[in-house]
Image (cartoon, rainbow, N blue to C red; front, side, top):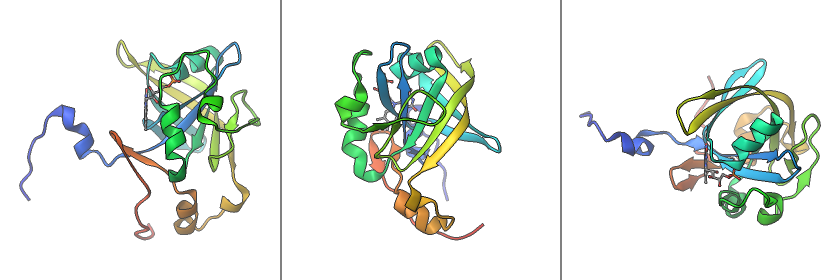
Length: 184
Ligand SMILES: Cc1cc2nc3c(=O)[nH]c(=O)nc-3n(C[C@H](O)[C@H](O)[C@H](O)COP(=O)(O)O)c2cc1C
């Protein structure tokens, strides 16, 4: 197969894409915020630790710096419209649960609420924030609690991931999960 070198600006063409999380945070003064994030990855399962790539101009980033807490909520493909509402840059004082018509429910270990409509949730406390350049950071969060819709607490992942129906993102386009291809 002949390989071609493509422009660095075409990174999304070569990328396999990323799963979308909705990050819920709360400002110091108690304003609830939600934003979609694709640059989210687990860096350890035991203990569970996540890394997030963020621009510094996000309310999400500012809230995390202020409160050191956030929740990673896993949206399903059916929530696409609401996900896009949370992707709009609203003023910091706007409650994005109200804007996107998502339902909040208290988390067990952190102040930002879980998003009821999402099927699973990782409550996180900040371990570290690393500056990448003038505008970007990596936020490292330790997971302090995980919750999931009761009927989705299944270890048959072929079935369970189908029901979780996670949303994937490729630079402007959304996709669902592909197909089950076998065991390790
Ligand atoms: C699907 C999707 C994924 C995104 N992923 C990221 C990301 O990983 N990091 C980031 O800084 N912004 C990301 N954004 C942009 C923010 O979600 C967007 O700027 C949002 O308005 C920020 O909201 P906030 O200011 O309330 O935090 C993404 C947007 C979309 C639609």
